[in-house]
Length: 62
Image (cartoon, rainbow, N blue to C red; front, side, top):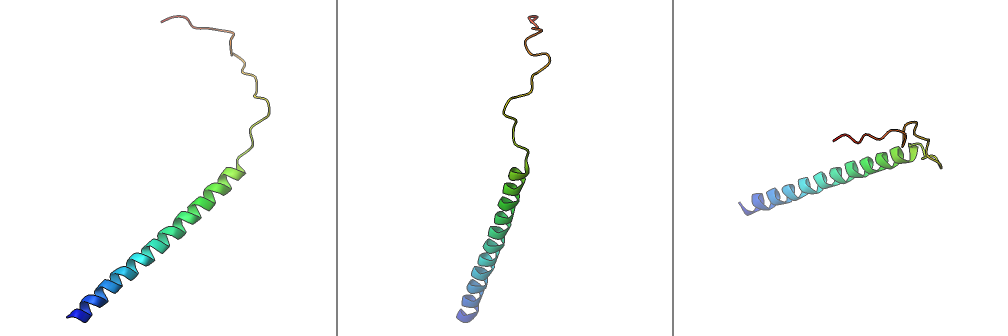
């Protein structure tokens, strides 16, 4: 009986190790993908585009 219990404990430990390894790989892949997406985003312009209505009309109704 003790041998079966020891083997069950080792199997559970192995399963947990494999699951953690898979989770770590998935997180690393997700992080790498996120970094690539951030780097692929267009860079902001040095000067912002003028807003056509900014400051011309003010709504004072409450």
